[in-house]
Length: 237
Image (tube, rainbow, N blue to C red; front, top):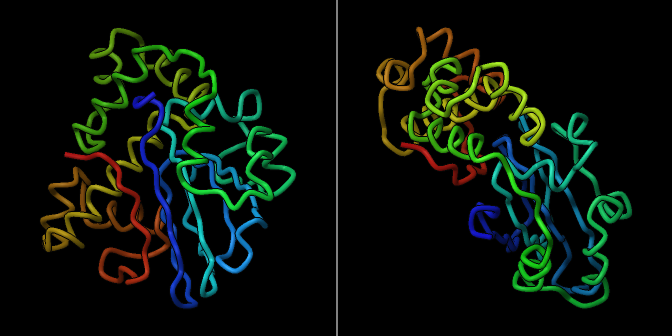
């Protein structure tokens, strides 16, 4: 099951505020409530994100979430995965997608409760070539060309792209670009790497290429990175 879940997370707001959530190409299973009314639960299902979005919260708002590994998007969205990118289902629509979440309503759920429900699901097997391709992409920081990646895992680039679309919900190229974006962003924000050096280390052809990618996935430029970002813990080298 560890290979199906990428992260178990929670957030409790101590003050009102907002945060920019950056896309990571993954699906999350979430429940939201408020400390004053813990039994009033809103289930949320997210599709693989490629666009940033802002979340506003009030003092006492709480979220509990399970982030799936990218190759398990199809297990959650099934035949609707093609329409899932950048989609968010709430309430009854989320329950239609993941009916088991209904048992959390009226119970004041905890993160452990949500984790038990996800662990108890029957998950279809995923082609190991896709799992290996995703791991290799992360190890390369998203810099490996898809044709070379396909050769590493033993299939054609066309077939690998089909595996990505059928299971992740994104093309292999888009997924690789997301990894490249996050790795380079971390170099700048956490590693204090100068922008010019970050563009080179991140595998971009030039600064303009890096700036276009940052605007696409973050809505900002490398020189004007917001301070209220929510950075997903994406594996990278």
